[in-house]
Length: 73
Image (cartoon, rainbow, N blue to C red; front, side):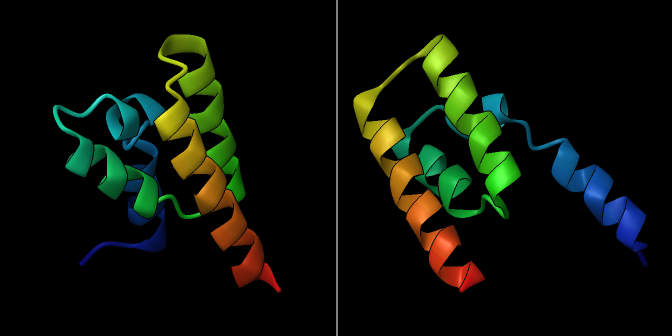
């Protein structure tokens, strides 16, 4: 059985590159959907801006940011 430390290490392995450079858009959408917090989201936005700068992906990241903000309220 994993400890909380093990779980955070596992989530650290799911980098912005792995979330956003998937082989198809369904996997990219899933990667964005599973972003757990604003810090991870900001890392993904920075990665996307630096590498691909795809409008559609940035829009999805914006929607995810709005969803995370609503969840904080």
